[in-house]
Structure formats: structure tokens, C-alpha cells
Length: 226
Image 1 (spheres, rainbow, N blue to C red):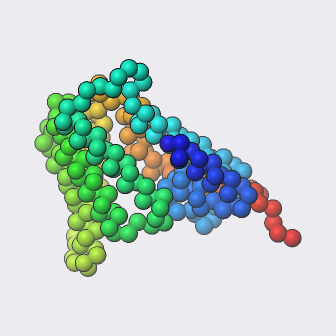
Image 2 (cartoon, helix red, strand yellow):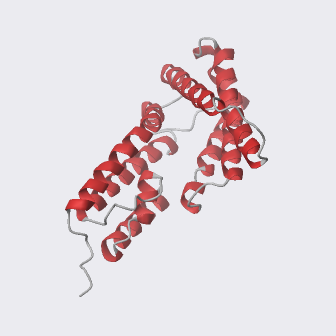
Image 3 (cartoon, one colour):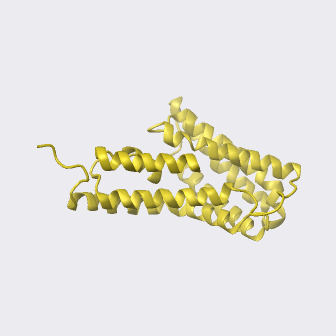
């Protein structure tokens, strides 16, 4: 998280001095910068605040026990922890690649597919209809990988498949977060971070619209060249 915080600060300086929001926008909203957005003081401030919230949430999730020795983990929990760290690491592609190629999407989906399978034995006691929940996760991420591969091979694909995978992913995440909330091994901040990830796409869309509007009515940070 310290590396992310430093990168966020550097991106903010670049935005203020060079008038380029691209890096800061990607670090805080995880999308490509809107062409109509200008590097104004309000927009830079909003983006830095958004990035600060992500940094805090990530720190809450990854810092480990607050005090005392770490809890003893059984084999299933250790495997799940390793898979979750791998899933978090796969998101680094968002910072390194402007737009995800098909293989990055497939890799991310396969990592999450493994997470789905490993969540099952750890949370089964707190999951009602655990097998159905696992099936939804397998469909969501296995289907996403299949959609990408079919697209690359230019093979026919039903148009509704992507929507089904998205709905299955939403169902799986909601039910797993509910089970985590009931399980004492997860901090409340970690579960709330998962809830935030569900709401983030809506927030990102709203923030993008507000920043574009602010950029159209506010003087950019960099003075115009005479």
C-alpha cells in the first residue's frame, strides 16, 4: 500500500504541473481518462481522495491481525489466502496495461475461478446452499474466460452469455460477502471493502461525469502557453 500511496502522490504532482490526468485517473478510478476531463484543482483533489480511500481499504485488508500472534490457519484457509493474494496481484495489470488484452482477462478469470473453488470448503458452514453458490461462481468466471477465448477464435457465441456470467458473478459475490460477515475470521473492514468493490463501478461512473463537468467549467491547473 505504501508503493500505491507514493505512486498516487507522484501522479498528483504530474497532474498539477503537466496538466496530465492520465496516470492519476487510472490509479484512482481504474479506467482510461475521459478525453473531456481537464486537470483542474477540484478534479485532482477528487481523484486523490478516491485513491486515498482505496489505499486505506487495501491496508485494512492486507495488514493482518491488529495485535498478538497471527491465527493458526488450516490447509484450506492457507490455500484460500494464497489464491486471494494471487487475485490481488493480477489487478496490477490495470496499472501496467492501458487496456486489457484477452489473455489478461482470461488469466484474471481463471485466478478468480480458483478462488471460488477454495472459498467453498472455508465458508461452507456459513453458506446456505453452498453448492449452488459455488456453481454460480464457477459459471461466472469460467464463463468469462470461455467468452474471451471464443472471441479470439472468432467462434459463434450466444449474446446472452456475457449477461449470465455477470449476473452469476454478482450473486456469488453477494452471498460470499454475507458469509464472510458471519464468519469471525474476516475483519469488518475487509468485508466492507468487498461491498465497496461492488459499488465501485457506479461510483466511478458518477465521479467521471462530475469530473468532466468540473473540467468544462474550471480553469486548468497548468496556465496556458502564451
